[in-house]
Image (cartoon, rainbow, N blue to C red):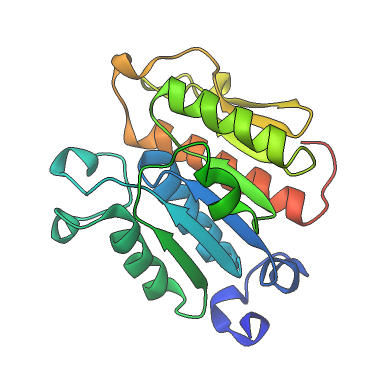
Length: 203
């Protein structure tokens, strides 16, 4: 299994043995979701549930974990290919569909943690509402304010019950999106998920 794999030889002690048995869901495979998924794959997560209805476009390449040869492919399929090139033993469950509230428990019910990675505010609110009703004891990690550039010190994690908000809590997508800032927030989401799975202390 994973703990015999040289990929994870530099992991934090004990991390791989825990992560290899855990499941994380990712709702949305764009700037946040694709980068968070890659970080989790490199950390040694055992299973990822990925859901997105969109297809890769050239305009995605400034911030999402895709390449020119991915253009035109379903995002879940392209992302799965990249993950398999990191570690082909990671279990992947792919859903190429537009998520509706009723899909949340069906698709992500097995997940220990869900990472929310939508663009639209209304979709975020619907997912948060359904997840909290269905799985009040399971963490949900939300991207909340990642637009613009710079202002790194304004990015933070805010906890509210089992909700964890990553970002600056204020910037709007209309400001434009910078690869570095989007990736920071995506990796914050992945890092919070890893810490929670490891039973870490205060976020």
